[in-house]
Image (cartoon, rainbow, N blue to C red; front, side, top):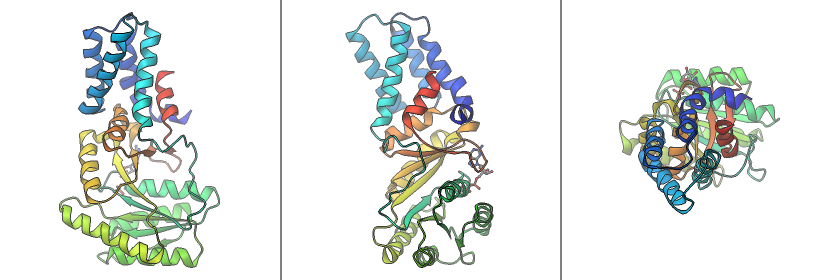
Length: 304
Ligand code: GDP
């Protein structure tokens, strides 16, 4: 399975280590809990989330004193799935959008280099594959390269793109994009935005303005504010999530580059801490390397 392949490193490292902690153990003692804590923290699950998991396991084993390996594995799996369930949107496995919203507008935010453009391209590809009409908007007008890169993906997927010259007003690009989408009866609009973090107030003002302009064209948009985070950057990803959620209302997350890291635990930690569902995960550079995040598949893939 592709999910198994994309997460190979995390699987052999993070979850492999987890299984080792409980392997052959007939009861959970302090040593097991310490080892468990160490594996979770070192896999970027995050300290708060780790302590929560440990606490829950402690609570359970204090009730049922002697547990076999299988049972411990099961508890671990349940606790991790439980953490994810508090935030996950549901049990989706397909790239779907609500039928009653047309155009469905996704505003994509995140700092440069995390894989924002790539994720937009992969998403456009998935929606187009389903026969949906997709329009891209190049509202990251701060860097010429951002506009060019999005154009490359638009050509690759063969979807229209709305852009202006570098330095133009992002809100103006967003306005044009939505207007164009309405005119051509498009199903999905995906808008790229600038990812500068050096000035929080600027970021907030810019995103707020882009949103306000969108609402002028299509009421209730953006329907989704998708924050893209690089899963291989661990604590940086947490920090970025903190900053973006402070600047705007983030409704879902895409965690990229999970193929290149052994720290797949970041998905669990971020989802838990920010109470925002992880909707997509990036597991490679190719056009097909984006997956709908499904907590059951995710957890299962590691405990097989
Ligand atoms: P942006 O600056 O946020 O728009 O980032 P890009 O989309 O240009 O991506 C930056 C780099 O990360 C590129 O080389 C991408 O091919 C790479 N990339 C993006 N997503 C993934 C992923 O899921 N896995 C891997 N291995 N590389 C990725």
